[in-house]
Length: 251
Image: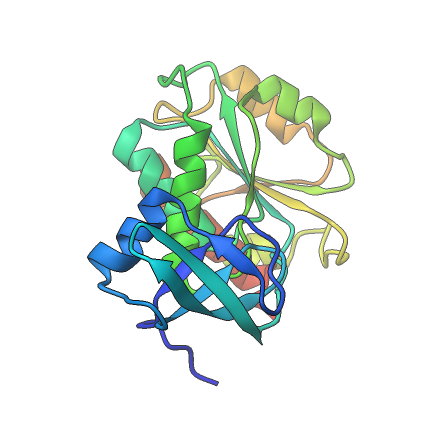
């Protein structure tokens, strides 16, 4: 069944069921009425990350628009257990990285502070807005969990030792990453196991951080090829490899 990417689509933070009435924020009303030029009775696809995707009708006046849910058109799907763990970047590059991680199917976004991280503050609300925008535009049904910032040391200490840590290490000798992911001794993975894909800051991890990551049980040190990638590029490359070899692309 093909998907209509031209259909207006909106994330709503409300439970969805038949005849549910969903009030819209000022920003959502402006988007539907002034940007998309929709009027009363027009169809909109809506989702909340829990109840699948629903066909809804636009109702009410221009100043008090609301949506009425009619029928579920796609059942809810679940994301693979892939955590994207990253040192925050500045502004537009962080926006890009969050959007791409959502498009690539990460189920958890975990910002971590490393010794060489240059960003001191992370706007979690902006991250959430970027995640919603990516999901709306790409027909996704699920949103990732966005976790509060923690230190890299805290993340390493809290990570379940039975789960898999994929450490994208620019110092490891360049080799075929697909071979590394598909022939490691800890594979194949059990369905309940989580995978963390960790990308460092622009200056890379320092030696102490690198040693702490490599010492973890079930750690795969992964080369992303013969070239040094910027962190936002590395995010796309690493998540592509993991999804293709271990995630829901390999199903």
